[in-house]
Structures are given as C-alpha cells and as structure tokens.
Length: 93
Image 1 (tube, rainbow, N blue to C red):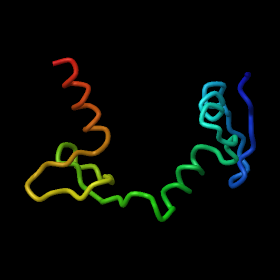
Image 2: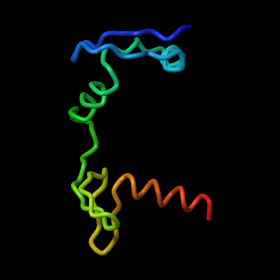
Image 3: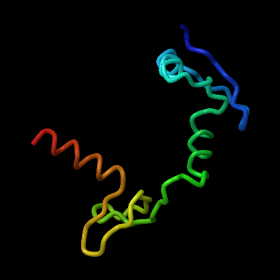
C-alpha cells in the first residue's frame, strides 16, 4: 500500500496517511482518518473522556506546561522536555 494524501475534513489541509498507519488502521478494523493529526488531537482533547490537564511551572527550567496528573505539594514537577531529557540520561547511566 502506498502512502495516501488526504484532505482534512475540518481544516481542509492535506495530510499524509502513511503506509504504516494504514496497516495499523486495517489491523484494528478502523476506517481511514478524515482529520489531520493536529485536528484529531484537538478533537480528542475536547472530548468529555479526555484526561484533565494541570498547569505547572517546571522546577528545572521554569517553563509553563501542562501535565496529566495533579502535582503533589513538595514533589518536583518537570515539563515534557526536561522529563524526556532526564529519562534519556537515566537510560545511559
């Protein structure tokens, strides 16, 4: 199956439905996506079943971000980038 260019139902931009994505959708017996990945994530975030997000300030870099859990008092909280960086450093330690 070759990659397929599809027009987004919502924003009308063209997006690529890759061969790998097609295979995953086929295996799960799902219809091909009608929205681009950006619009799909916005729709998922706005649904009632979406996990609640909490605003934080990263204890390492000071950046404002959101996390999917309620931060606990006295425990440090990191933004996505700092968290990923600390995880990658831990793998090589």
